[in-house]
Image (cartoon, rainbow, N blue to C red; front, side, top):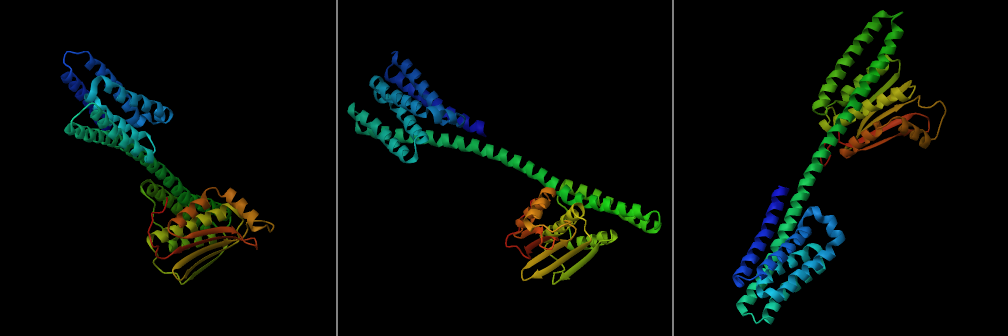
Length: 381
């Protein structure tokens, strides 16, 4: 499409040159001046291309004033030699004025050029009908040149915008894939590591429990494989209630004291909200196991009016009390893109995510989101 638009523009410019050449040949048959006129109009065509082609934007910014001045000389000086026949060049100059000059001055220059050509015709004792024709043809050709030039530029810009959108779509898909792998596999691999350590400790004395843990590891690894396959197509829907149960079972198996509170939370959340809160819980548990020596954990879900709040609190973050600001900064530096990823997901559905170390030394993650968002957005995944 950009090439076709540029072809139309070039075709119109060449057609004007051929028309002027025919007019010169008819007006002065057998004379050498038509050849001079054709050369001059060819130069005007070249200058007009520099004013019209989108690819010449940098050249116009630097030399546009000089080329516009040269076009003005080639428009008015040949009138002395060719008379009214050369008036068609005025439309090109009027169109260039609209293309190069600021908006306020562009239309003033367009009007002056449009009126100057018939003024010259009147000075050469042209009749009324011819004068009106020159006014209309100059204005019309100027608008045609301007319109075709802008159309070609818009087509090129549209084509570039489509390419950028395609690149953004590819980048967004790569980001979705990376985030989904982080959310899904990070949790699964942490659970496998934790349960493997438990199984190793149980083998010498409690072989039956060790077998149960190995069986659980096998189930988690199969689920991880299923998650990878789901990531390849789209983000997998998740359930907050299911994640709460899974997290509680995994933490209890690791001898971590878990307290689960569910108060006034609807049984069936919106699919998108359910997935986002489940993702927050999964990521919080993953970070808890990786970055703390947790012994006690609280998972609390509560509905307050039109909001649902999920809170995860754990100890074992620091050996000595630190200020919330410094400890949170350290945690954020270690946790990589996890918190930023969660914040983006929660914000996308109109919610808010806060995370940090509390004055008592425990780390707390709180996600709040509306039950029925006014606008359902696709979670950046």
